[in-house]
Image 1: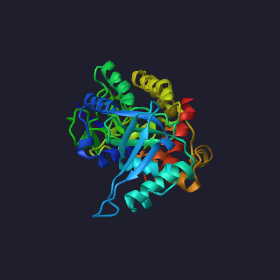
Image 2: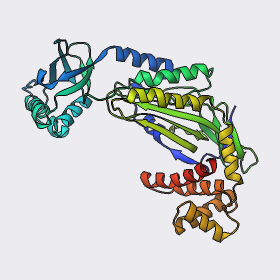
Image 3: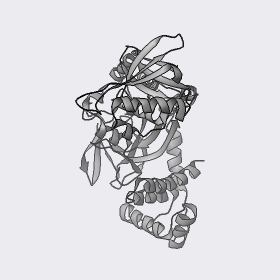
Image 4: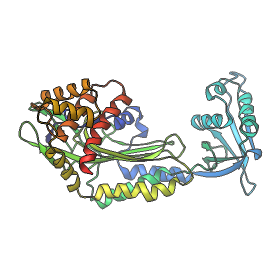
Length: 396
């Protein structure tokens, strides 16, 4: 089954999945959620988290005679039971230790290892007066130190993010899946194929020893929200992505949306009703994810699409302009555009839809259309939010 989509003319673009796809080597790409979840559970089973008194911790550096800056750093510490442990920082956790000690990581990396170790040791004990650290490292002595954070860091394990997603996929009978892609064009519009095979080149499931990212869609069950210029239905489908880092390199979170297509480089197109929940890894982060993010995801995935369709229909029915003066007034006063941008938005709508802005839906589509031309991402997002705010007011 394939269907045509007006993905490039309606809604907004989203490059979050694409940036993950571009940056991941093949050994961080997974073909199934089962494999990725199993990998993260096994990986977590090899690690342990401990609270360490910095006065019971030694940061040591080995001298490398061949290259003064190529020595290795290790940390030795005692746990609450007075057991001795040793771990070697990864590149990431070395940066965390440097930050916690108040020293620039780039500068420390250029120093001989013993001197860099002394700087970290002194900074932790005296410069920043940090009495306690939370370390996350291998249970094997001499194994890697994955993370070093403050004692109140609220670790959400990557597998804890993936497990409710796996349950959701199982409960849906496989409806939620890695997305297909836009594979061609017809009548000037893209053709979307939801049944493209999952390969290392198409997957949207990514995991490393630092983080996890998963993007899934329900693209075999599209929702009709209107009519395309060629008379075919305007179809959208639901999608969400989730992310986390158990080592502190990013927040945890979930983003849900409706969209019209995904291209070969996994860029999302025609996105509407985008919403997200971000959770910083503070002390109560695991509880927040369990009681806020995970239920929100289940509600979105199992929820009826009628509310969304009703919102689209209400926006299309809400007349806001009957002449150029009323159009300009609505786009400037209600949508918050400058007069120049308001005129540009209306002109773009005439170009793409063959008529001027008349409804709230028209206004939102016109604003997202001109947002595509804004060069800087932050500025583009600000314009796109004006369109979202209009639709939210109708939906509310």
